[in-house]
Amino acid sequence: MSQTLIGSTILAALIGAASIGLVGCGGEHVAVGVGVPGGPPVCPYGYYEMPPYNCAPDGYYGPEWFVGGGFIGAGPWYRGPGRFYGHVDHALDYRQGYRGPLPARGAAPAPNRAQFRGSAMHDPRGHEAPRGRR
Image 1 (tube, helix red, strand yellow):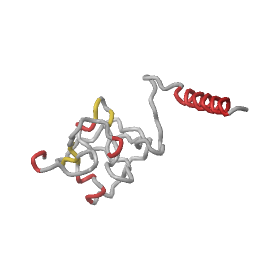
Image 2: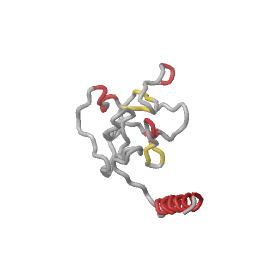
Image 3: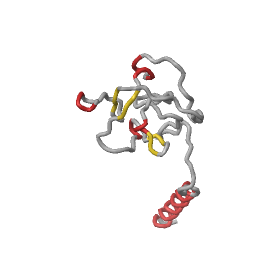
């Protein structure tokens, strides 16, 4: 076989494999991936902004972290506005001593959400807001 024919065959196989992976990715489908390497954790109330990106408990994030009921992300998967700072509840932050239960990845949210009580502000990477932004 010639080099051109081998290269064309490999290219066709790669295009075919990519096409199969894209089937069913229309707007009406919901992607659910638990523990997919490189993808954000699938958590009912968002996930902490720092590794190991565990699911955050209900009430850790303030309402501005959610758009249309969906979490806007944190850490490397943040997909919200630039220079964003949102409210968080330090009482539910494992870095601040919280040792209570955490939801499992892939868990469904409770029918009634907890009332948010936090007053701290973080950026999407978990850094505290500057004094003028609090």
